Length: 347
Image (cartoon, helix red, strand yellow):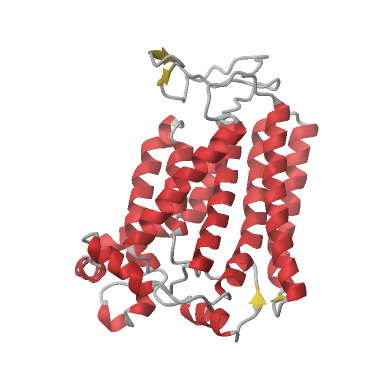
């Protein structure tokens, strides 16, 4: 299968379309419901997106360099979606369906997980918790690193799969959270700093006033900058951790660093995010399914080839894979970065 610039542009159009639909839903909610948009909170993100798009266009049309153009475009897409997705999560929470915290806690006990025991371990080992808290707080930095790394190593199609999977996993997570809302362990267990004096978890109960305000109708302001994460089930932090690992796997020098960091981030999610263990399982499942669906839709799940104008001298950064043929026999295929007319790899 040949992958050319048309396929990359089609992927970008789908990503922008998903962002536009999300933003339209948010805007429509203000027209037919009681919500109000605090436009000033979107100003910084709007300026940043405009500058990134302009810079991407410059590199694509003037410099004819698709690598920085892809990185800049993806950064703009991620920021734009974050600004639309955060208000959408507020609208979802306002549905105010019955809380599922008791059920999620029961699921954890059935699986043999003890949330309070993990809190006690973290409180007894504050130095360990510092590492966990750092990993949990790294998602914004990691998002940037993944976008830049995939672009500059030439994995342009994989970069699109990463961004679209991020969008799709977030939308699915928001939809599930509307149907199965939860306030999280901090609120459900009525914990206070006196219960963990040696540590300072990242989120604790900061989101609770917003979450309950959205549910009881006392809060109807939609903000971009400064929006709080209010989703408990499924865990979006876990979803991002799994997504980062999947995206970085072909990048040789970041593969294991990313895997280690994100395993720690996911392990930190129950305490530093106030999540149940069932949240982590659900977040993992959603991300894997979204990655597979987007990869198949974009053609990244199959071996792909693109016209090569000039080879890239760097060694292959995609591992050897085993391909199973249609008749059930195994054949060994070495998948190497394929290049577009500008010399950029497209997977």
